[in-house]
Length: 371
Image (cartoon, rainbow, N blue to C red; front, side, top):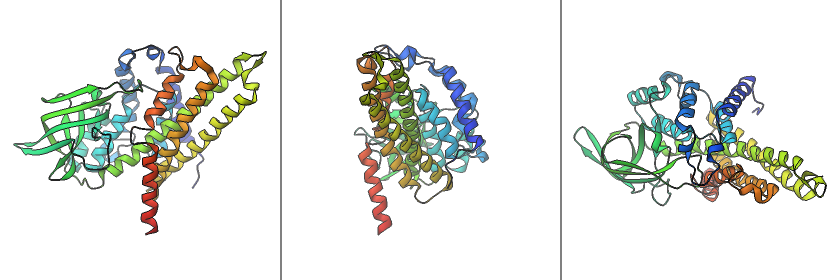
């Protein structure tokens, strides 16, 4: 394997870098009570759709770009570096759910809408306790004339408020199946929660006999397929965020003067920056290997993404913590954006389960291999 980025990868990353530096302004979020409603959330998403990013992972047969996962992390990394407030995470989760569980007709219709910019998706799978792995009992499905109806609730649904359709995991005849519901359907309620990371919208979705369409493809391995790819997204965001935290801290350490010297000249600060740099490089390697493994269909891809998410989420958390220590008390004031990165890091480490849960998955994979 060769982790050297190709010229195409660098060009994709650089174009995303320039675009997001121009379009993302976190200034309106640097005040108490701020939410994505205070920034041009819908406007930025429209520009991202025009760039074709939601269709990056859609196969060409359905009208998408059909890019691999190394291409994907070029863009996702830049989204994480800038904390771009846009519903890309939910859109990718919805796309992968349709790819994993939809029929050919459903893939053509739904993914075609995503690629054309006419449709935005989200995935509702977590129960109230934050559990993802078991079928759960949060939402039940029952047959009804012309389709199905869903009743119950799902928690921690990313980007549900901005989606046109939501993919909902529900229990049908004792098994987890996946259904498509319209965001505006009668009986469906989306309530935003006070999520720590204010650059991302998270909601509780409640359903009361909501009409739904069953994704009629195979659902047996749908969640592991989606979960592995969402691990990659979070790991890529975290690796890029750790490097952003390092860049901020280094720049400040060069400028801030104490006792007549830049604080970066003091050994205590140098050690902090060196720790961030070391963890950041390991995080970058982990996410690149995971992206390569998924792109190549390597049998150890699930192991690679679980390891990347576990390590990178903790590395990002530590990097943002050390970043604030370098800045001192000013680093956690509303006027500085350091705390936004810290909050993203803490939320990325919990969104799909704590790092310990991914390490448990690693152990289970290795045990199965050993058996």
